[in-house]
Image (cartoon, rainbow, N blue to C red; front, side, top):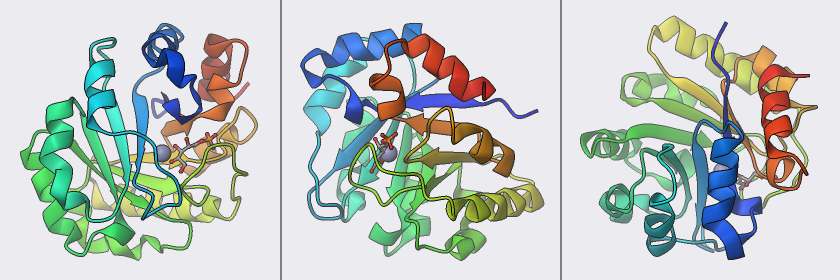
Length: 218
Ligand code: DX5
Ligand code: ZN
């Protein structure tokens, strides 16, 4: 059995009490904290950057799993490391020299991740399997929380699961978008192991109960 991890996305947290929200999900059993950085160019939304990440770095020892939905992320890889990020995921569509970007992320001492938009085929991973620590399969189009899970992504999760198993590499599969206690069992069965959940966690009354449900599927 693969270990299932839950990564609450703070995009749906109460930003006026961001530190307290992160502490609450840590106490509720979160495994990593998912930080969605958006630039208003790669996606039609803007979130937060280095000063916010740096300041919440002080409130938790959980790894920061940062999902960059920005154009030309190469400009900022070192800054994200310095802000306290542990896992750094770039969108495949935003990187012209993806292999180089991943190797720089690893050299900086972070786990290197690639995110795939719903329409992006997993073939882009074929020749970079040795450079990857994580594949993030977007199960909605990136940009906003609270969107509906795209069921057609289940086939992609299965495909990436096979690619990873065949490679023999230790690469995590993460899913992001519309993950709830209802959709979690399906993505887990397809081979996902890190579940990003924004609205499902932060809009629930009981963070612990929701995180437990996501992990166990009941
Ligand atoms: C969407 C972000 C997600 C978002 C997920 O572009 O990458 O991390 O917060 O939100 P939910 O879980 O509400 O679909
Ligand atoms: Zn995300």
